[in-house]
Image (cartoon, rainbow, N blue to C red; front, side, top):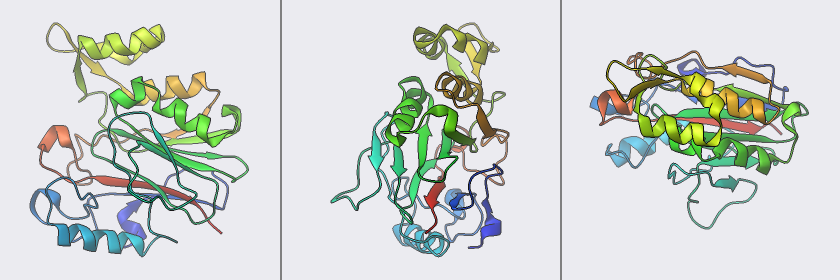
Length: 246
């Protein structure tokens, strides 16, 4: 696996902030999981997943702090090795070389750092986690005012493909009525096309995070580069990783 197989976020982060997002390229998995699938919970061959993780590890200063993601808003503090894999959907670190990571395949990965290069974080923002405050909890755990943060929105299902029901739109609007701007009527009554990127930008804006980058890719439409659960059901995951360089 090479860095060229990954997305390197295009954002003006401090020099000591490092981040990368894996794509489908560079691994050893086959079939529906081809080829760089680092997720061990999706039905892939465990030996292939382990090899993929080893290949990914070669690009990192340390093994990542893998999470058991539950579509919630819990945040893992990755400054010390946990005794077990933590149940959380975000990770934050202020310690050099501690690698925060989330796995996605349509859900939105949100990378965060402060302008001083003193803290980093990453959130797994599917619609449930996004609606219930995973971005807010991550920023809170970082302990830095939003105005001093930068955010990068990684590959997620795009607004042309993310069809949801009335209940999803209502859940977001119950938290903030401005969320209505991120939903367009779908092809059938009671269906909506949701812009998860816009929803995330709204939440970040409320926190004072105005420097937001990325948000152009669609996992559903680009099957060559990205896994998509909604498109394929049986599929791998991309890893979004961020850390402070020593």
